[in-house]
Amino acid sequence: MSQAAPKGKRLLKLFFSMLYISAFTFGGGFVIVTFMKRKFVDELHWIDEQEMLDMTALAQSSPGAIAVNAAIQVGWKIAGFTGMLAAVLGTIIPPMVILSIISLFYQRFASNRYVALVLKGMSCGVAAVILDVSLSLGKNVIKTREWVHLVIMAAAFAATFFFRVNVIFIILASAAVGVIMALMARRGGGRQ
Amino acid sequence: MMLLQLFLSFLQIGMFSVGGGYAAIPLIQNQTVDVHAWLSATEFMDLSTIAEMTPGPIAVNAATFVGLKTAGLPGAIAATFGCILPSLILVSILAYIYRRYRELPLLQSILSALRPAVVSLILAAGLNMFLQVVFGGRNALSLAHAQWACLVLFVAAFVALRKAKASPILTMLLCGAAGLLCGMLGFM
Image 1 (cartoon, rainbow over the protein chains, first blue to last red):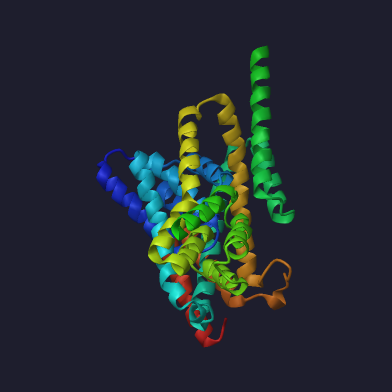
Image 2: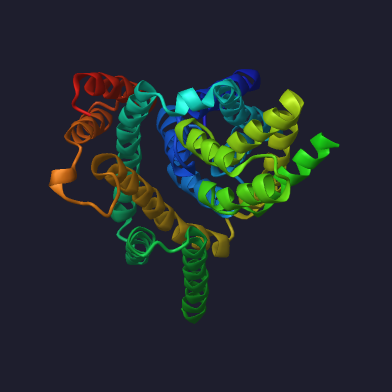
């Protein structure tokens, strides 16, 4: 994390980064999380990759919108309470403004052919962004060569992609594996 | 009174929707169509479509839409504040616990088991989106139904991101422009 920049500057950067990301990310919560990873982990180096994944898991398992939850986590991490406020405001202002404008003429917007084409093109790009980020993340998991993690990754993928298991159950099951591993490690440690 | 009702309704939506947008939709429908009749069933459909087409969490979109419609700008603010308040409190507490206790072996072990699962969740979301744009869903996976223009756009974007480390938002906007162009030329 870069401590060099003064806090005011970091807050502004955080606010505008979230504003920018939130204004352009369509689709579910995982979309915005991938864009946040690119910005705060790869570009600004404010958060490390593991922590970003932890925050994603926490955001996903808490009530409320994933984007807002992730913003709260990232905000606290980067600049404490004011950081949290800046990140949340940055996240909710764009949808509020855009929806306010669109609600004035929403039927024309929703049935416009050109709007549909732009959105379709953009979703091709979004799919590429998500797959790019998830491949990088997956590669890092594989590199650790921890077989338990590989099994969790494969099982979670099968559960969500093929069997459409509710995400909450997948999170809970993985957490349970974590608890078991901790207990086994403690036992193993006691024997030595 | 209206403002308070909006606030309380969306507070419930924010509090009980665990797992993001798809969990929130039935709750939003229940509160805004069934309990309060702020929206008709058709308006709710319109709202879902717009929410899908515009950035931002569906709960925030719905709060803005319903708030504006029933009580103007103060309504939009009251409803949005209601839907994010539970997150502000709960997630802040979680963030504190995470920062304070993340070094504990038990929490370390849980988090390290969660990370690979989260990677898979993100990957699956991306794959589903890919299948949606290229094949129009996962039930019609035949090359005859493939949208070639979308596939080309996807591959171009993917290569730009991976090899050239292109900016994701720029990539996405260029894809939007390319989509418009392809459509006007009749490829999409």
